[in-house]
Structure formats: structure tokens, C-alpha cells
Image 1 (spheres, rainbow, N blue to C red):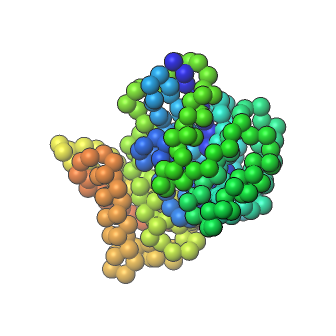
Image 2 (cartoon, helix red, strand yellow):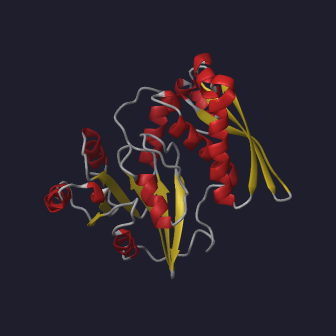
Length: 292
């Protein structure tokens, strides 16, 4: 038997969560086309024959440290590098930034094998530009392997999985054969709500929101959940609720459908909106919301 912990790192919005979901074959991390969607470690588990691959999805490493929440996410991403067997450094084939270079610098002293994953290669136009791009990115450090993929389409993900399996250390499995994540249902419920906040709210407002669970219980075939959406200002609360409560209803409906798809049963979801002033820069508030 072989088992390994694999940290998935990179700057924000390069497709780390989409890649983890694709490799695991189940939606273990929320996904949105906005940076800093992932805020905490999420482990996705894949079992193939006698091999267990445990992917640690991490927040995007970014240079801006504007708030305590930003600092927490950077620390969470960096801490994932400390006790893993392999590292996937994910970059966007369409665009490289100074933050990509900063991630490469952070990996300079690691003794763990690092594989470079060039994501979104299906969007490179013309296709003839792909080979020189791969050569350029591969030359930036001594990578154990360089694998171009498309997480959304699944292109070359089998090859990436094979590269990882070939490097797994021997050891017992850490999870049960049917387990796909280390996160429980309560975490998945609040993350489903937060994903819909990100998708349905405009501009910067999603970054000032977080979600906590009030209750979660099963009544026969029905799952009952209630959660609180936290914002920093009264004006933000009004935007989340919307005129006549319509925005909050849209968020709740979308989240309910997402949860039902994951758990395979009917869901009743109740949402409230409350204000915790400046919570993103308040260490005590962050700890209370589970960012610890």
C-alpha cells in the first residue's frame, strides 16, 4: 500500500480547487471565478488500486497582506508545505504574474519533490505557443515533473495522476476507501452558501462575508440547516438581503440545490444576515468564525 499527502499551491485563481475536484472526482472544494475563494485547507482523497492520494487544497498565496484574513490565508497556504510528501505548483497557462514568482521563491528551499502543473492549456491560442511556454516555465526551477493540464476539461489529468502515483511513499491509508474528503457535512453546508455569495454578489462584497452554521439536523428524508451570513457593515447587509429579500432568496435557493446535489436528499435551508464590524481585520472574530 502507498499513501501520500500532496499540497496544491499557487497564486489565487489559477484553478487549484478545480484541479483537486477533477482529480478526486467529487466536488470537495467550492469554485468561483474570483480570487481567494478558498480560505482554509480542504483535503480531497483519491483511492486508485493500492494507492491513496490525499490532496491538500490551499488558499492562493498572494502578496497583499491588507487584513488579518489575508494574513491568515497566506499562513494557511504556507503551513501546508510543512508536512507533505509532494507539492503541486499550479500556474495559469494564460498569465503569469509577480505572485507566481513569489510562490516559486517560497518553494526554493523545500526538499519535497515539486511538480509543476500548467493549468488552462486548452485556452492557449495559438496552440503552437504551448511548447515554448512549457519550456520557459519548466526552466524556472528544478521540477520533478512538468505536466500541462486542463482541470475544467480533464485533459492530461490521468497523466498527472500517474506522475503522482509513481512518487508515493509506502505506507498505510489514512482514510476509509469510500471517503473523499476530511471535511464534514457542516463545513460543506457553509461553504455551499459562501460559494453562492461569491457567485451572486458583485465586486468586493463577497470578500467581506463569511458564513457560520446555526443548526443542522435530519428529519426523516429531510435535512434541515440554518446558517448566518456575516458582513462588516449595515449597508452590506442591505445588499445581501436585497429589495424585498430577493437577493437572499436567490443565494439560499442556489445553495440549497448545491447541498441537495451533494447529499442526495431534500434540504430546507434558512439564512440570516448579521453584522460583525470589521471582522476581516479582527483576530478574535476570525478565530470565532473558524479561521484559526
